[in-house]
Each structure stands twice: as structure tokens, then as C-alpha cells.
Length: 354
Ligand code: DAH
Image 1 (cartoon, helix red, strand yellow):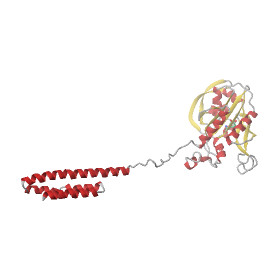
Image 2 (cartoon, protein in one colour):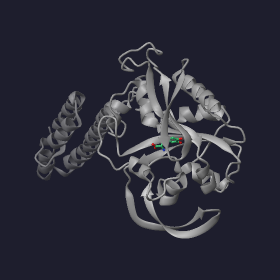
Image 3 (cartoon, helix red, strand yellow):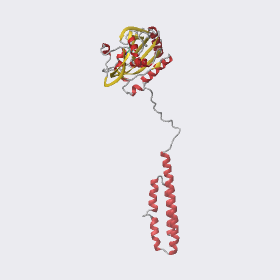
Image 4 (cartoon, helix red, strand yellow):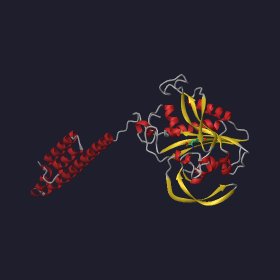
């Protein structure tokens, strides 16, 4: 009797295990078939009432069935949990990978690199100078002494710090305490370079500059300029025009004409403003050039001999031309950008277009 019951339990357990769908189901079966309140355990309790002989036989059978059911359920659990894991972690190696977002150089850096490439291809060297500059290199040496009205042309950020510098005056050096500024132009690099190098040379100096002024769509307190300086024995305005024309034609990838107009800068004599033929209409007149046919670029001129002297060259020995203009303005022309403030806005919708 008891034996048959045990066999029946075993068969029921096997059938139930067959139908179990989840690990949870199997845990339930464990309780149902082997738990404290199960029929199986009830049968074991009845063993005390049977004969010694039957107790022995039924006991052995019960033990082996218990082990069998337990093994069956353990195996089932294992199978179900391994199919479960496989589903969660299934990797489809044929799915295309997610695209990585790639960053890129800031548009101004790209423009600067492009400019540097064009000039190095024409035999120019790239020069650099400090953004925190002393008064001598930013102003005095560029023929802008302290009381010179031209200093008012540039709104300056003055720093509290002072620096001890050797300043050349009338062919001797004086050691003085200089007030410091955030450089107002890249022209300081002219002096810095000439103090260390002898002509002939051609350099450009791109860099960040600062002006103490309120911003609008064409002005920022922090922006970039790009200085050129060519010095030798027989440099003249014609050389300037040629180099400028070459550069702008390469930069805008079309034939560009140069026009110069008289102007004034303390560090050049003669001084001029220079324009390029309109990059949109080529000179006929359009809305981009306000019907003028020309676009204003920046200042230039033949280096004032006082600047050579302040840099340590003998007066009258060399000639050179220099120019300086805004990098942002050039980028705005090339890409038809209407507001200079976009460059440093950090707005990715703008940056990503380049
Ligand atoms: N430094 C001038 C400025 O920031 C620009 C300039 C004009 C630079 C004439 C030059 C130059 O080298 O020759 O306004």
C-alpha cells in the first residue's frame, strides 16, 4: 500500500516537473512534493505503525524516491535558470553598433590651422607671444608712449600686477617696473620676435586678445587676431599687396583683389587700411558688401623705424610691412556668420555645423 503510494507520488512529481515553466514553479513543486506538509512526509510518519520488514522495504524505497525527486527538481531548476539567463544576455552580433559621437576642432581653430597652412606654404614662420603682457611690449615699443592719444584707440584691461622689465630707450636698456595688461592686439609679438631674431624673416602670429568693451554682434571682449610681419632689406608696399592677395585668394579659393586706403597707426608709417574685393559678388556690388564691391579687412603699413629701434635694430637699416586683423571677422566672412558671440557661446547647434 505505502509502496504504491510512494510510486504514485514519484510519477506525479515527474509529470508536474515536466510541466514546470519557471524556476518559481519548481520551487513550488519542491514544497508540494517534499515539504514538511507533503503527502510524502506524511507517509514516512506512518512507518512507525508497520511491521519491521515493511518498514525496511518502504524506508529504502522512500529514500531512493526522495533522492530521485530532489535530483529531478534540481536539474529542472538548473535548466530553467540557464535558459532564463541566456535570454537576458543574448547578444546579437549582427546588430550594427551604436555610432560614437565624434567631436571636432572648434571652427576658429580650424580657420587658424588653415591660415597657418597657407602661410607656411609661402615660407612664413608661426610666432607666439604672451597674452598677459607688460606695458612696454603692448604699447611703448609699438611707438605708443604713455601720453600718446592712440592708446585710447584700444580699451584696455589693466592688471594690478607689475613686472620688472628691461626696456630699451635711446640705445640703452633701463630696468623699470612695468604695469601689466591683457594684450590688446597681437602686435606685441612683433616686438617679442624682433628682440630675439635678426632679419630677413617672415612671420605670422595668430592669438587671443582682449578689449575692455561691451559686446554686440560684431564686438567681443575676448577675440583673436592674426598679425603678419615681414622684415628685410628691401621690403615694400608691393610685397605686402602681393602676399595679401595670394593669401586671401587661397583662403577664399577665388581670385581676390586688394585695395589700400590711407590710415594711421603709431607703429606703421605709412599706415593703411586694406580691403579685399567682395567674396560674394567679386566687386560688382551686393548686399554682403553693401553695394561697395569691397570688404574691410584690417590695418597694415610699413613698420615705423621707432618700432625697429625699440626692438634693438639700428634705425634705417631695415624695412618691413605688418598687418593685423580679426580672425573671427575672417571666419564670419567665410561662413557667413552674422554674430561674433556665437563663437564662444558654447552652443553645440552652432559648433556642430563645422
Ligand atoms: N594692432 C592693430 C589693432 O589691433 C592692428 C594693426 C594695424 C596691426 C596695423 C598691424 C598694423 O600690424 O600694421 O587695431
